View 1 (cartoon, rainbow, N blue to C red):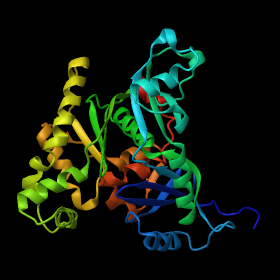
View 2: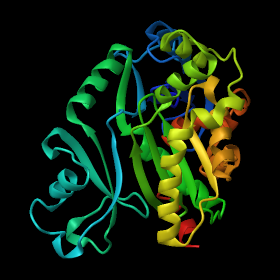
View 3: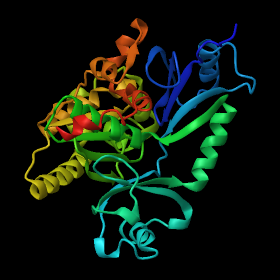
Length: 347
């Protein structure tokens, strides 16, 4: 046989709530998403079994070669407005990192992107002041790479998963001609990353030091449980309907979100009209509805099948049921390439 069969593609999104894996018919579009599988966080045996099922015959290296998205708790994703007259000053960007974001530049690997389209920000050709700083602590990148290699995954490309999600949601808004500013929330255990997006890019960003763990003491108090460990087990077990208690559980987070949204709306004159939560444990998916209800906005439920088809990505029948689950948005966002879609954003 002169020509080998096109190799499969693998995309892996790792966040605090799970490892999301997709096998595709090829490594770059056009391709078919053949299977979607999820492993619980920290369950190495479950992940190994899934990888074995998805790729029984490994490459010569013994690894599953994949595009991998990572979500460090300490990831940097902040929008900023630069002083144009200082852009070419030596050390200016490091100064922004240290003074505005309180980050030591020598301990982080960072990049600066155009806030409008995610392209690399070139200082020599800078014509806009609006940028997004993104990066992660250097030591965490090394630790993460080592950990995925130990799990049998070789990251051919390693991305900050949140950056891919921001690009995908902005692209989806452009594709659907949506003019409504959209709130994206990534809820972790100790913190929440909040973004306001439009079809023209990232309009606002904020890291809020309040996460799911802040809800545990409220559960304990309201239900009269003896300790926080009992409250935690019940909260994550999905054996009790917390929906009615939801507004109380998210009260602290809600105040911060209302503050961010209010500031944005005053500054821009625009109204945030919808929200999407791409990172939540499956058993806590109800939180997205509570957030939307308390903010008096709707939940964005993207039509991923139509959008992906337009990006030359087709879902096999087995993958269709998961296309409506926002938790899979991260892994889909790793697949999409945007160079062929720029014309839509000019409309």
